[in-house]
Image (cartoon, rainbow, N blue to C red; front, side, top):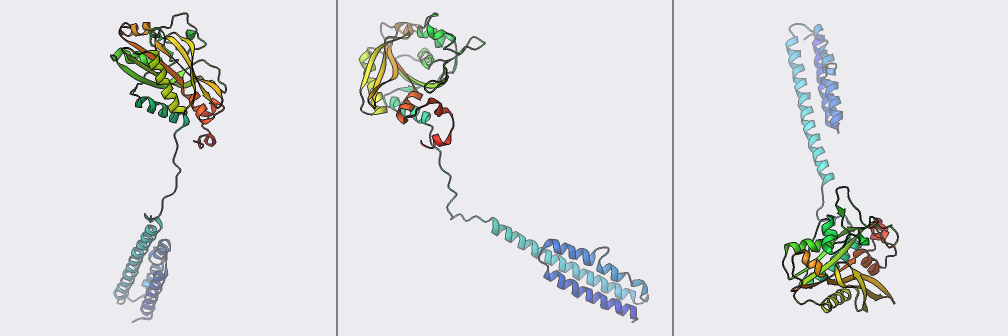
Length: 333
C-alpha cells in the first residue's frame, strides 16, 4: 500500500466518523440539509478527498474508490434516516400544538337579541293570531288604485298630496299604509276573513324625534256578517290590554276615508292620555270595490305605528334611536 492510498483511507474513515457524529447531533431539517451539502455536495468534503485520487497508484485506485463509495452510502443512509426522524418529530409537534381539547368549554360569544321593533311586531302579531287573525304581506311599491282609490280616497284628498306620498317616475308609489294589503287579500278571499298586515310604509315627513320618513305599521281587518262597532271596540280593548296591561282606553270620533264611522284610540299611560291607533267600520264603498255585498257583510279595521308602541313600551325618547344601530342602545334590549 502506498503512502498516498493510506492517507486517503484514513481521511475517508475520519470523514465518515465526523459526518455520523454531526448528523446524529443535528436537530433541524435546515441544519441537516447544510450537512448534506457540506459532506456530499460538489464542493463538499468527500469530493475534496477524492480530488487526491490522482496521486494514488493505479493498483490501489479500485480499493480507494470502493471505500469512498461505502463512505458516501453510509453518510447518505444516515442523512435519510435522520431526515425521516426529524420529519416525524415535526409532525408530532404540529399535531400537539394544533390539538383541540373537546372537553374544554368553548369561547363565549354573547347571543344577539331581537331589535325592539322586531319584538314589538312579534308581540302584537302573537296577540292577533291568538284572536284568530291570519298574517298577510304585500308589496311596498304600490299602484294608486290599491293605495288610494280602492280605499275610498278621492282624488282631492290631502293624503294624495305630493308632500305626503313618495311617487315614482313610472306612476307607482311607495305605500303610505298597509291598508293596500287588505284590498289585495279581500280580492282573493271570500268572507269571513280576519287578517293582520304588518309592514314598512313611507311618508314624506320631516324626520325628528317623533317622525320618520320610513316606519312600520300593523293593520287589522275583519269582515263577516253582523260585525258591529262593539266587536271593534272589544277587539281593540283586548289587544291594548294585552300589550300594555290593565289600562284605561278611550275612543274619540275621527275621520278616515276608508272607514265610517271612524275613531282615534287613546290609552292612559303613566298618568296622561296617548293616542295609539286609528280604527273604524269599513266603508261600504271599500267593500264594493272588492266585490263584497255591503248589504250582507260588514267589517272593521284598525292600524297603528309600531315605532310609537315600541317607544311607549320601552320609554324611548327619540324615534331615531331605533334606526341608529348604536350598540350601546341596542344592548339594553
